[in-house]
Amino acid sequence: MTPIVSLDLASWRPNAPEEQQTAIRTLEGGGVLLLPHLAFELSRGERRFLSPAWSNDRAKNISLEGNVLKGARGDPESLAALAHMIARFAERAGELVTGLFPRYAPYVKRARTSFRPQPAVGRTLSWRKDDSRLHIDAFPSRPNRGERILRVFSNVNPVEDRVWRVGEEYAAMAQKFLPQIRRQLPGTPALLALLHVTKGIRSEYDHLMLGMHDKAKADLGYQRDCPQQTVRFPPGATWLCFSDQVMHAAVSGQYMLEQTIHLPVTALYDPESSPLAILERLCGRRLLPAH
Ligand code: SIN
Ligand code: FE
Image (tube, rainbow, N blue to C red):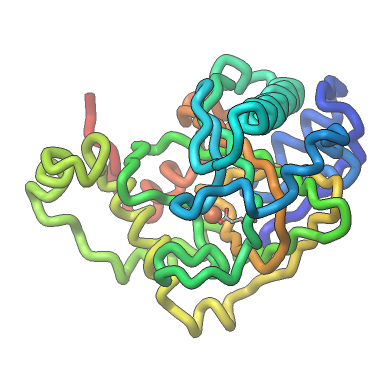
């Protein structure tokens, strides 16, 4: 079973060695680190952002990348305040990761921060985009060639839990789905990049990650019967996981902040714990082109 480990942390700048050890072991072990009492506090003025009305109709999430706010609508003054709130969360999340995982510190450059004011489930989406089905994160247009996806989440809903299902361990899931994935046709990765379907070349690693994402989501029997547990993230809780490794699915909830941090495999305390290393062991071959 995927470990869910709680730490009674109340500071965004932790530095106790025991807390670091627990955090490292949990995350790199493919688990979820739950910090039930580490709340991201909204100011009174910011509480007005707890409404789906701030998202424009096109985007699923509101996001901040650098100084650019996307997916939101409202008057300029409100949007500046909203961007400020999201930027503050990005800063806290970065401090938290630096405090718990000192080795990751050089990579805590801001990737993308999102505010998710829509209900976690309920909108009709294609099965591939349906995050209420158990999946690992893998994105068709963004090959990452083994780079890790570390995510920090905070439930800013004052009254409602965010609820997930968390599935079986990565290696068990991979063993189930790898045999179902066909090899990429030679030339396909270059063609996809040329047509700008992908941002850069889709490596064999990316092809397999995407394949497992799709096979797991499409398999309703697996969704129903695979080993899984329900995990509740109460109001004021923060949690972290490597979302490219933890099988996760949204069940319910609304109003969450999320920070993504990309890490090269070499930044890990134990690179052998990465999905890349696990897949290469299972396949018995290298899955990234040699440089
Ligand atoms: C996801 O990351 O797949 C969805 C998580 C959520 O909406 O809580
Ligand atoms: Fe996801």
